[in-house]
Image (cartoon, rainbow, N blue to C red; front, top):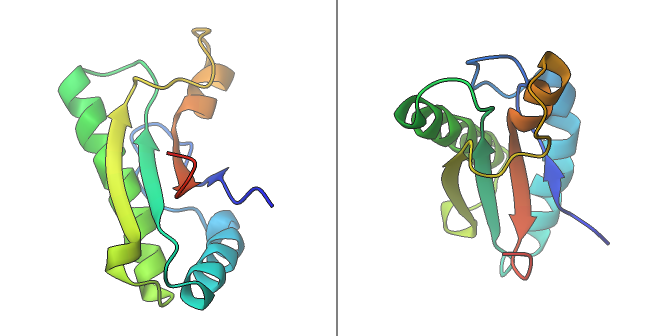
Length: 114
């Protein structure tokens, strides 16, 4: 079963987890609490706009907010690593709003996927 997914606001310069992703996070949280040996890596991503420093900081806030949400749902801190990739891992390389929105995200990867 592929447990990798992306979650976070796709709004420009926003680091909050949207309500529409809460149910997905609850599924991840349940799986992780039932499987305490599993670990995840949360990667915060941004679009190409903004300075490198700004995007790295924003990506870190995105990944940290996902981590915090999962912890509030019972996942152990030791199961979650959060990092920022800034604009370094785009899903789409075109320069338009639809593409930018795809690149503003948080990715959840399970051990074995990173």
